[in-house]
Image (tube, rainbow, N blue to C red):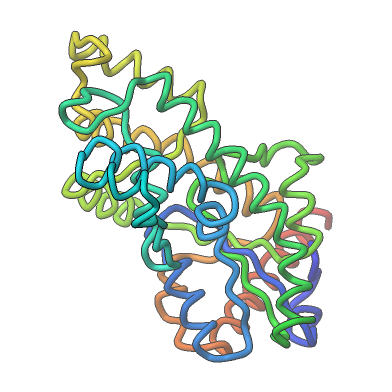
Length: 295
C-alpha cells in the first residue's frame, strides 16, 4: 500500500486516495464534499469514461436517433445544428443511455450482441480511465496546485480487475499511486439500492460471461425470445444477481489491496479532518490485524 501506517498517511503532504464500492455507498457524495473544501482534486472515472473514451460513441448514437427525424436530419446534414453530450459529474445519463439495455426494440431495447459490443467498449474505456489516474495526479498538482487527490472509481471497477491476482495491472498501478479504500455497504443498503433500481432501472456494466449466463437464465425462466425480452424487467431481475456477483470482488479489493471502511462511517464524515481520521483508523485496524496474524 502507498501508506503503511496511520502516521504515514496523516503526515503525508500530498495524499492520494481511491474510493471503491458499489453505487450508493457514498463515493461521489464524499468526493464532492472534499472537492468543495478546496484542497482535494476530484477525478471521476465515470466522467473520464464518458468524455474521453466513450464521448464519440455517445454523440454518434445521438446522431443516429436525430437522423430518423426528417426535420433534424435536414438540419444535421446542412450543418445547421450540432449535437453534443452534456455529461457532468452529477449527470451520467448520456453514458447510461448509450450503454442501454438488451431486449425488445419497441421498448427501447438493444439487440443482445450489439449490447455486448457496447459493454466491451465500456470495459476497455473503464480500464484505460483507471490507468489514467497517475497522469491526473500529476496534472492536479502541477497544473492546478491541489495538494491532495481523490479518485472516484465507478461502481463496476470490480468487474474489470482481478482482485485475487497479485499482478493485476490496474490494481497494481492504482495501489502504487493511491490508498485504495473500499466502502463496504450493508445488506440493508443493498435492499434499498435494489428497491430504488426497481423503481428506475438504469443501464449497468456486466462481465460478458456473467451477462450471458444471466441472460440465458432469464430467457429460460420466462420462455422468451431475445427480441421479446422486456429490457427493464431483465435489468431488475438481474440486478440482485449483479450485487451478489460483485460483493466478494469488492471485499477482495479492500482486504487484499487497501483498507475497508463501513458505509455508515462515511455518512458521518463532514469534512477533510473527519475523512483523514477515518482513514487513519482504517490503517490502524489493518496494521493491527496484520501484526496479530504474523505474531
